[in-house]
Image 1 (cartoon, rainbow, N blue to C red):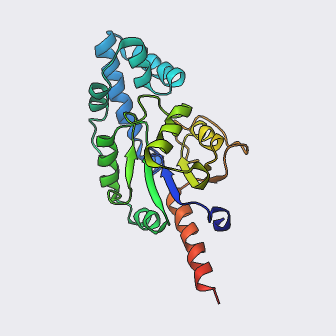
Image 2: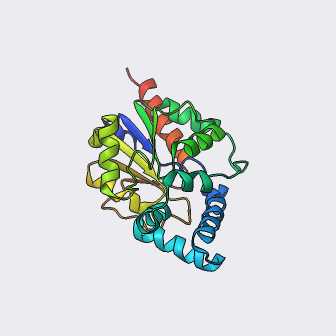
Image 3: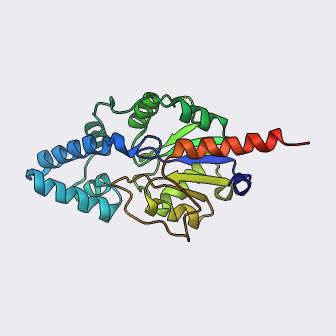
Length: 230
């Protein structure tokens, strides 16, 4: 595994359901806040708000993009509202912190959320000091993953060479644009409701059900190779 990744100098991670287990189900809390937002905005009942939310997600990439395109929604107001959730479902992960810290090169979070929310989650996980930057939906100019412009903008903003980068993500569809520009891809196939796709050999290079163990194994292989050098 490691031999195929010796060229990687930039490690890019999705946030939700990638850096914490899908079993935390933060999306259930965020979905409830989105539903409430749509009910208040559109005067819809709970069931209709749910249908609208999911339609916007699949047609526009995120619920926010649909709201902005069709209703002129202020993205800052929306994100502040829907991310106003308790994070007590998330706990520190010292093993993941050690595994990410041991990776050679740069580490960046690439999320359709925003920086304040991402920083709260990272701090809850004990990963606040692990990453150089968070590239969020505002930095994407509201063109979310999997829009190709989001990936091009990430690379421009941080001087990233795609061919020496790995992108880890729980949503299979978000890996295809990364592979299209030359990134190595890792599908965190953890049963997330949001995953929405099966593995496809054409754009998924590696697959794991749990990112902590995968990264720890990668680092162990590198250490073993180092120890065995003459």
